Image (cartoon, rainbow, N blue to C red; front, side):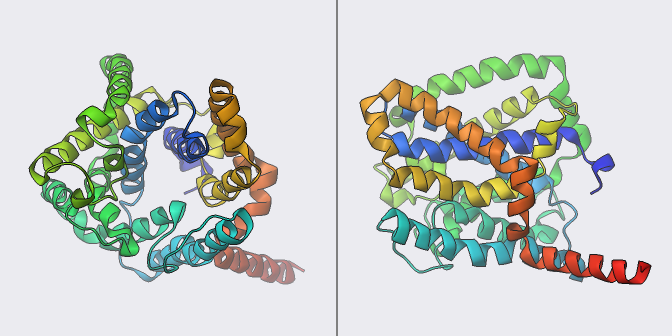
Length: 341
Protein backbone atom coordinates (compact mmCIF):
# COMPACT_ATOMS: atom_id res chain seq x y z
CA UNK A 1 0.00 0.00 0.00
CA UNK A 2 1.50 3.31 -1.06
CA UNK A 3 1.78 6.13 1.46
CA UNK A 4 -0.86 8.12 -0.43
CA UNK A 5 -3.39 5.29 -0.18
CA UNK A 6 -2.79 4.41 3.47
CA UNK A 7 -5.48 5.16 6.02
CA UNK A 8 -3.81 7.36 8.67
CA UNK A 9 -6.36 6.26 11.25
CA UNK A 10 -5.25 2.64 10.91
CA UNK A 11 -1.61 3.62 11.35
CA UNK A 12 -2.53 5.72 14.40
CA UNK A 13 -4.45 2.80 15.90
CA UNK A 14 -1.60 0.38 15.21
CA UNK A 15 0.90 2.68 16.88
CA UNK A 16 -1.31 3.14 19.95
CA UNK A 17 -1.92 -0.59 20.27
CA UNK A 18 1.67 -1.71 19.80
CA UNK A 19 2.76 0.91 22.35
CA UNK A 20 0.32 -0.65 24.81
CA UNK A 21 1.86 -4.03 24.04
CA UNK A 22 5.21 -2.64 25.19
CA UNK A 23 3.61 -1.06 28.27
CA UNK A 24 1.85 -4.31 29.19
CA UNK A 25 5.03 -6.34 28.90
CA UNK A 26 7.04 -3.73 30.80
CA UNK A 27 4.60 -3.84 33.70
CA UNK A 28 5.68 -7.45 34.13
CA UNK A 29 8.87 -5.98 35.60
CA UNK A 30 6.99 -4.21 38.39
CA UNK A 31 4.36 -6.71 39.48
CA UNK A 32 4.86 -5.86 43.13
CA UNK A 33 4.31 -2.12 42.73
CA UNK A 34 1.10 -0.48 43.88
CA UNK A 35 -1.45 -0.13 41.09
CA UNK A 36 0.42 -2.30 38.60
CA UNK A 37 -2.21 -5.06 38.62
CA UNK A 38 -4.98 -2.56 37.95
CA UNK A 39 -3.11 -0.96 35.03
CA UNK A 40 -2.21 -4.38 33.66
CA UNK A 41 -5.75 -5.76 33.85
CA UNK A 42 -7.23 -2.59 32.37
CA UNK A 43 -4.94 -2.78 29.35
CA UNK A 44 -5.31 -6.52 28.83
CA UNK A 45 -9.09 -6.43 29.07
CA UNK A 46 -9.29 -4.79 25.64
CA UNK A 47 -5.98 -4.12 23.91
CA UNK A 48 -5.32 -7.70 22.73
CA UNK A 49 -8.87 -7.95 21.28
CA UNK A 50 -8.28 -4.61 19.53
CA UNK A 51 -4.93 -5.75 18.15
CA UNK A 52 -6.42 -8.99 16.83
CA UNK A 53 -9.39 -7.13 15.33
CA UNK A 54 -7.10 -4.77 13.42
CA UNK A 55 -5.03 -7.76 12.25
CA UNK A 56 -8.17 -9.35 10.88
CA UNK A 57 -9.31 -6.11 9.27
CA UNK A 58 -5.96 -5.79 7.49
CA UNK A 59 -6.08 -9.44 6.36
CA UNK A 60 -9.15 -9.10 4.13
CA UNK A 61 -7.18 -9.30 0.90
CA UNK A 62 -5.32 -12.49 1.77
CA UNK A 63 -5.82 -15.34 -0.71
CA UNK A 64 -3.99 -18.58 -1.41
CA UNK A 65 -1.96 -17.21 -4.28
CA UNK A 66 1.78 -17.31 -4.79
CA UNK A 67 2.43 -13.63 -4.08
CA UNK A 68 0.52 -13.51 -0.80
CA UNK A 69 1.82 -16.86 0.44
CA UNK A 70 5.35 -15.69 -0.29
CA UNK A 71 4.69 -12.49 1.64
CA UNK A 72 3.33 -14.55 4.54
CA UNK A 73 6.55 -16.56 4.65
CA UNK A 74 8.71 -13.43 4.44
CA UNK A 75 6.88 -11.30 7.01
CA UNK A 76 5.69 -13.86 9.58
CA UNK A 77 7.22 -17.32 9.16
CA UNK A 78 10.86 -16.25 8.73
CA UNK A 79 10.77 -13.67 11.58
CA UNK A 80 9.23 -16.33 13.81
CA UNK A 81 11.93 -18.85 12.95
CA UNK A 82 14.64 -16.27 13.65
CA UNK A 83 13.35 -14.33 16.64
CA UNK A 84 11.86 -17.24 18.59
CA UNK A 85 15.31 -18.79 19.33
CA UNK A 86 16.97 -15.35 19.53
CA UNK A 87 14.67 -14.17 22.33
CA UNK A 88 14.69 -17.58 24.02
CA UNK A 89 18.47 -17.78 24.28
CA UNK A 90 18.78 -14.11 25.20
CA UNK A 91 16.44 -14.66 28.12
CA UNK A 92 18.16 -17.87 29.20
CA UNK A 93 21.83 -17.11 28.63
CA UNK A 94 22.05 -13.35 29.09
CA UNK A 95 19.19 -12.50 31.44
CA UNK A 96 19.38 -15.75 33.40
CA UNK A 97 15.69 -16.65 33.21
CA UNK A 98 14.86 -20.32 33.54
CA UNK A 99 12.83 -20.54 30.34
CA UNK A 100 12.21 -24.04 29.03
CA UNK A 101 10.16 -25.81 26.43
CA UNK A 102 10.73 -26.78 22.80
CA UNK A 103 11.58 -23.99 20.40
CA UNK A 104 9.05 -23.11 17.69
CA UNK A 105 6.54 -25.76 18.79
CA UNK A 106 5.66 -23.83 21.94
CA UNK A 107 6.09 -20.09 21.28
CA UNK A 108 7.91 -18.21 24.01
CA UNK A 109 6.55 -14.96 25.47
CA UNK A 110 5.94 -12.33 22.76
CA UNK A 111 6.54 -14.68 19.84
CA UNK A 112 3.11 -16.29 20.10
CA UNK A 113 1.45 -13.61 18.00
CA UNK A 114 3.57 -14.29 14.93
CA UNK A 115 2.66 -17.96 14.63
CA UNK A 116 -0.98 -17.43 15.60
CA UNK A 117 -1.40 -14.60 13.08
CA UNK A 118 0.21 -16.80 10.43
CA UNK A 119 -2.33 -19.55 11.12
CA UNK A 120 -5.23 -17.07 11.10
CA UNK A 121 -4.04 -15.74 7.75
CA UNK A 122 -3.87 -19.24 6.31
CA UNK A 123 -7.56 -19.87 7.09
CA UNK A 124 -8.66 -16.36 6.12
CA UNK A 125 -9.99 -17.33 2.66
CA UNK A 126 -12.40 -19.70 4.40
CA UNK A 127 -13.33 -17.45 7.33
CA UNK A 128 -14.29 -14.52 5.10
CA UNK A 129 -16.62 -16.57 2.90
CA UNK A 130 -19.72 -15.94 5.04
CA UNK A 131 -20.71 -13.91 8.09
CA UNK A 132 -21.93 -17.11 9.80
CA UNK A 133 -18.30 -17.83 10.58
CA UNK A 134 -18.55 -15.03 13.16
CA UNK A 135 -21.04 -16.71 15.53
CA UNK A 136 -19.30 -20.00 14.83
CA UNK A 137 -15.99 -18.46 15.92
CA UNK A 138 -17.57 -17.41 19.22
CA UNK A 139 -18.57 -21.03 19.87
CA UNK A 140 -15.05 -22.13 18.92
CA UNK A 141 -13.61 -19.59 21.35
CA UNK A 142 -15.78 -20.76 24.23
CA UNK A 143 -14.89 -24.39 23.57
CA UNK A 144 -11.25 -23.40 23.11
CA UNK A 145 -10.95 -22.97 26.86
CA UNK A 146 -11.13 -26.76 27.12
CA UNK A 147 -7.86 -27.00 25.16
CA UNK A 148 -4.84 -27.22 27.46
CA UNK A 149 -2.03 -28.02 25.02
CA UNK A 150 0.16 -24.95 24.29
CA UNK A 151 1.57 -26.36 21.05
CA UNK A 152 1.61 -23.51 18.47
CA UNK A 153 -0.37 -21.54 21.07
CA UNK A 154 -3.62 -23.13 19.90
CA UNK A 155 -5.57 -21.87 22.94
CA UNK A 156 -5.01 -18.29 21.78
CA UNK A 157 -5.64 -19.20 18.15
CA UNK A 158 -9.06 -20.53 19.18
CA UNK A 159 -9.83 -18.09 22.00
CA UNK A 160 -9.16 -14.86 20.12
CA UNK A 161 -10.59 -16.07 16.82
CA UNK A 162 -13.88 -14.04 17.05
CA UNK A 163 -12.01 -10.73 17.07
CA UNK A 164 -10.03 -11.72 13.97
CA UNK A 165 -13.14 -12.91 12.12
CA UNK A 166 -15.01 -9.73 13.06
CA UNK A 167 -12.17 -7.72 11.56
CA UNK A 168 -12.44 -9.73 8.35
CA UNK A 169 -16.15 -9.00 7.97
CA UNK A 170 -16.46 -5.36 9.02
CA UNK A 171 -16.06 -2.84 6.20
CA UNK A 172 -14.76 0.74 6.19
CA UNK A 173 -18.33 2.06 6.26
CA UNK A 174 -18.90 0.21 9.53
CA UNK A 175 -15.77 1.58 11.17
CA UNK A 176 -16.66 5.06 9.96
CA UNK A 177 -19.38 5.05 12.64
CA UNK A 178 -16.64 5.12 15.28
CA UNK A 179 -16.28 8.77 14.32
CA UNK A 180 -19.92 9.52 15.15
CA UNK A 181 -20.26 12.04 17.96
CA UNK A 182 -22.40 9.80 20.15
CA UNK A 183 -19.93 6.91 19.78
CA UNK A 184 -16.99 9.07 20.79
CA UNK A 185 -18.94 10.47 23.72
CA UNK A 186 -19.86 6.95 24.87
CA UNK A 187 -16.26 5.78 24.51
CA UNK A 188 -15.03 7.69 27.54
CA UNK A 189 -17.51 6.31 30.12
CA UNK A 190 -17.07 2.88 28.54
CA UNK A 191 -13.33 2.90 29.23
CA UNK A 192 -13.92 4.38 32.69
CA UNK A 193 -16.34 1.54 33.42
CA UNK A 194 -13.80 -1.02 32.23
CA UNK A 195 -11.23 0.68 34.44
CA UNK A 196 -13.53 0.17 37.41
CA UNK A 197 -14.09 -3.46 36.42
CA UNK A 198 -10.32 -3.93 36.27
CA UNK A 199 -10.07 -3.04 39.96
CA UNK A 200 -12.20 -6.08 40.76
CA UNK A 201 -10.94 -8.47 38.07
CA UNK A 202 -10.32 -11.31 40.50
CA UNK A 203 -13.85 -11.11 41.91
CA UNK A 204 -15.68 -11.61 38.58
CA UNK A 205 -12.98 -13.27 36.48
CA UNK A 206 -9.32 -14.25 36.56
CA UNK A 207 -6.44 -12.28 35.06
CA UNK A 208 -5.38 -15.48 33.29
CA UNK A 209 -8.62 -15.35 31.27
CA UNK A 210 -7.50 -12.06 29.74
CA UNK A 211 -4.59 -13.85 28.05
CA UNK A 212 -6.86 -16.40 26.29
CA UNK A 213 -4.19 -19.06 26.77
CA UNK A 214 -5.21 -20.71 30.03
CA UNK A 215 -7.49 -23.73 29.99
CA UNK A 216 -10.59 -23.79 32.15
CA UNK A 217 -9.19 -26.77 34.03
CA UNK A 218 -6.30 -24.60 35.24
CA UNK A 219 -8.61 -21.95 36.69
CA UNK A 220 -10.40 -22.03 40.05
CA UNK A 221 -13.72 -21.73 38.20
CA UNK A 222 -16.31 -24.37 37.35
CA UNK A 223 -16.56 -25.08 33.61
CA UNK A 224 -20.13 -23.78 33.42
CA UNK A 225 -19.17 -20.46 34.97
CA UNK A 226 -15.92 -20.37 32.97
CA UNK A 227 -17.89 -20.40 29.69
CA UNK A 228 -20.01 -17.51 30.89
CA UNK A 229 -17.00 -15.62 32.24
CA UNK A 230 -15.04 -15.97 29.00
CA UNK A 231 -18.05 -14.66 27.09
CA UNK A 232 -18.23 -11.69 29.46
CA UNK A 233 -14.49 -11.04 29.03
CA UNK A 234 -14.96 -11.17 25.26
CA UNK A 235 -17.84 -8.68 25.37
CA UNK A 236 -15.89 -6.31 27.63
CA UNK A 237 -12.87 -6.66 25.36
CA UNK A 238 -14.93 -5.83 22.28
CA UNK A 239 -16.54 -2.79 23.92
CA UNK A 240 -13.17 -1.54 25.14
CA UNK A 241 -11.51 -2.12 21.77
CA UNK A 242 -14.10 -0.07 19.89
CA UNK A 243 -14.18 2.61 22.58
CA UNK A 244 -10.42 3.04 22.41
CA UNK A 245 -10.36 3.03 18.60
CA UNK A 246 -13.13 5.64 18.53
CA UNK A 247 -10.90 8.02 20.46
CA UNK A 248 -7.92 7.63 18.12
CA UNK A 249 -7.65 10.65 15.76
CA UNK A 250 -8.45 9.94 12.11
CA UNK A 251 -6.23 12.65 10.66
CA UNK A 252 -2.59 12.28 9.74
CA UNK A 253 -0.57 13.08 12.86
CA UNK A 254 2.72 13.36 11.00
CA UNK A 255 5.58 11.57 12.72
CA UNK A 256 3.25 9.55 14.97
CA UNK A 257 1.24 8.23 12.02
CA UNK A 258 4.44 7.38 10.16
CA UNK A 259 5.61 5.40 13.17
CA UNK A 260 2.47 3.28 12.84
CA UNK A 261 4.07 1.65 9.81
CA UNK A 262 6.92 0.31 11.99
CA UNK A 263 4.89 -1.86 14.35
CA UNK A 264 6.81 -5.04 13.49
CA UNK A 265 10.11 -3.42 14.49
CA UNK A 266 8.60 -2.43 17.84
CA UNK A 267 7.03 -5.83 18.40
CA UNK A 268 10.09 -7.91 17.59
CA UNK A 269 12.70 -5.88 19.43
CA UNK A 270 11.03 -4.44 22.53
CA UNK A 271 11.27 -7.74 24.42
CA UNK A 272 15.07 -7.69 24.35
CA UNK A 273 15.14 -4.23 25.92
CA UNK A 274 12.60 -5.11 28.62
CA UNK A 275 14.49 -8.26 29.56
CA UNK A 276 17.72 -6.25 29.68
CA UNK A 277 16.16 -4.02 32.34
CA UNK A 278 15.17 -7.16 34.22
CA UNK A 279 18.80 -8.29 34.19
CA UNK A 280 19.92 -4.83 35.37
CA UNK A 281 17.70 -5.10 38.45
CA UNK A 282 14.90 -2.70 37.56
CA UNK A 283 12.37 -4.67 39.68
CA UNK A 284 14.53 -4.03 42.76
CA UNK A 285 14.42 -0.28 42.18
CA UNK A 286 10.65 -0.26 41.65
CA UNK A 287 10.13 -2.33 44.79
CA UNK A 288 11.87 0.41 46.78
CA UNK A 289 10.05 3.20 44.93
CA UNK A 290 6.70 1.59 44.00
CA UNK A 291 4.68 4.55 42.71
CA UNK A 292 7.62 6.28 41.03
CA UNK A 293 8.75 2.92 39.65
CA UNK A 294 5.39 2.23 38.01
CA UNK A 295 5.19 5.71 36.49
CA UNK A 296 8.74 5.54 35.18
CA UNK A 297 8.14 2.05 33.80
CA UNK A 298 5.07 3.16 31.84
CA UNK A 299 6.77 6.31 30.55
CA UNK A 300 9.87 4.31 29.67
CA UNK A 301 7.79 1.76 27.75
CA UNK A 302 6.14 4.53 25.72
CA UNK A 303 9.55 6.09 25.04
CA UNK A 304 10.91 2.69 23.98
CA UNK A 305 8.11 2.21 21.45
CA UNK A 306 8.72 5.68 20.02
CA UNK A 307 12.46 5.11 19.90
CA UNK A 308 12.19 1.80 18.06
CA UNK A 309 9.81 3.34 15.51
CA UNK A 310 11.92 6.44 14.98
CA UNK A 311 13.39 6.70 11.46
CA UNK A 312 17.09 6.27 12.40
CA UNK A 313 16.48 3.18 14.55
CA UNK A 314 13.89 1.78 12.17
CA UNK A 315 16.29 1.99 9.21
CA UNK A 316 18.82 -0.11 11.09
CA UNK A 317 16.41 -2.72 12.49
CA UNK A 318 13.82 -3.10 9.74
CA UNK A 319 15.96 -5.39 7.54
CA UNK A 320 16.01 -7.92 10.40
CA UNK A 321 12.20 -8.05 10.47
CA UNK A 322 12.05 -9.14 6.83
CA UNK A 323 15.56 -10.25 5.81
CA UNK A 324 14.51 -12.10 2.66
CA UNK A 325 12.49 -9.13 1.43
CA UNK A 326 15.39 -6.80 2.23
CA UNK A 327 17.80 -8.98 0.25
CA UNK A 328 15.42 -9.07 -2.71
CA UNK A 329 15.03 -5.30 -2.62
CA UNK A 330 18.80 -4.81 -2.54
CA UNK A 331 19.20 -7.12 -5.54
CA UNK A 332 16.52 -5.23 -7.48
CA UNK A 333 18.20 -1.93 -6.66
CA UNK A 334 21.57 -3.27 -7.79
CA UNK A 335 20.13 -4.56 -11.09
CA UNK A 336 18.34 -1.26 -11.64
CA UNK A 337 21.55 0.70 -11.07
CA UNK A 338 23.46 -1.52 -13.53
CA UNK A 339 20.73 -1.16 -16.14
CA UNK A 340 20.57 2.61 -15.82
CA UNK A 341 24.36 2.81 -16.04
